Length: 195
Length: 195
DNA sequence: TCTTTGTGAGTGAATATTCACAAACAAACA
DNA sequence: TGTTTGTTTGTGAATATTCACTCACAAAGA
Image 1 (cartoon, rainbow over the protein chains, first blue to last red):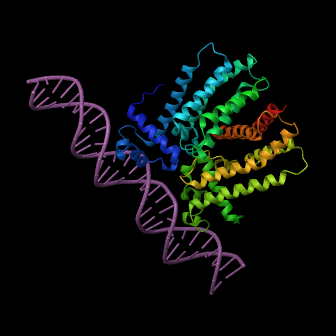
Image 2 (image 1 turned 180 degrees about the vertical axis):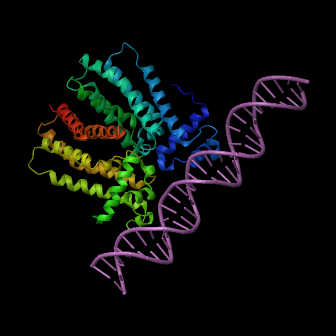
Image 3 (image 1 turned 90 degrees about the vertical axis):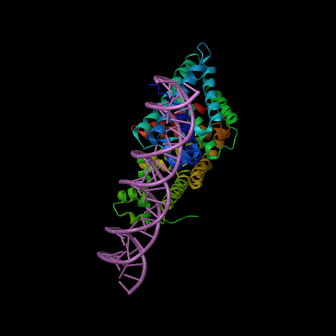
């Protein structure tokens, strides 16, 4: 299921992500995408058959990117608690480097638009879980974190508070140092769930 | 700053909230609002001067509703830990009863392109904090919850995982029992932060 | 009668998408 | 080398549709 994306398509995806993140779903028009790309509106259709396909490709790209990134950093043999820290610091680094992708993971504007997009969002969250849950289970098994909650619930806790931090960052127009606050949050939360 | 709202205006606000929550911001059009209200498009303008004013009134109404609801249930003299549980169970009850308001309260991002909604989200979160933080401080002071984190951080944790539960509820088309899952989540989380 | 609340027809602007066409470039061939 | 041919990537004009919003008018209750 690996869709190949041309360099030009990636440019359009990033341009669209910027509009989505900084101006909102209402501004994600072919006109604005073309303006951001500095070419005519019709040129967009040389690379995507419709606007919806762009959003679809954007979510697909993010899911793939996350998948390969995690697979790369999670070396077997490492301590599960270190893996846990690593997965979040990788996440923090990615959004700090490419904040314009944040609009895509807060899908409210996209929600209800189409089933395909709805599914893509669920797939994105499933990818995150796919890596997080086994690590958390290892942590529980090796007594690195408490056993009073299921791995699923710990994942929910971590993902939920991480998401809220990202949301706050966006709502304050990226005012604070996301890397710092993000690492603080994860450190604090892990300390809380450590026996 | 208390704006009075006519019964007909409230009907339009609720109709708009339903469209927003169940079909997304892209479907929130005068045409659809009129259809939901079962009258002509032009009739909408008998009650609101513009579409944006509807959204404005909706957010104002919700902020007021939340404020008075909290003020009502938080009786002085109660145990802070009970107040904490109460504030969330009140929240859960409200969403379970009127799930169509979720799209308005949890927009997760720029709904329009307007600063207005951005501010409204921040104001709503501030209201939530206004009640939550003092309660959490009391909890810490009376040793009802751990003191290894600041009240602010506990609030972040609780609000973040609560928001994620709401998102999951929406993404699964309101499939699971929100009251049950919500209460479980809060119970589990409170247990985790109890010394 | 006057105010409230509705209707239906109409407006201009914005929307996504399509179309015929052109410039740039590379491969194939004389 | 020069010519032909095809492909990719762009353009500008035109399309139908949808959008928020306006206005003259009507029913109906106070």
